Image (cartoon, rainbow, N blue to C red; front, side, top):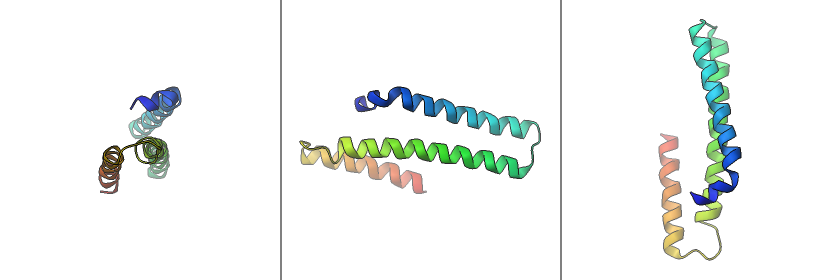
Length: 91
């Protein structure tokens, strides 16, 4: 995951925003907010997590599958890792 260090601060900022959004869901539930409000908050969390996942998947694809100079074994490993994540995500 060393290649993620170039975007580390951006990724951490995204994670902190997601944590803030999850905290907003918790606060909404604690104050008995309406279900529509909670649904909007949860949808925002899901969108943010999907955006984070998308960014990391694309980076993984570029670095571990499509980068010139990778051996066939490295490319295969990178693809398998990506397929495992995708399978877990779509369940």
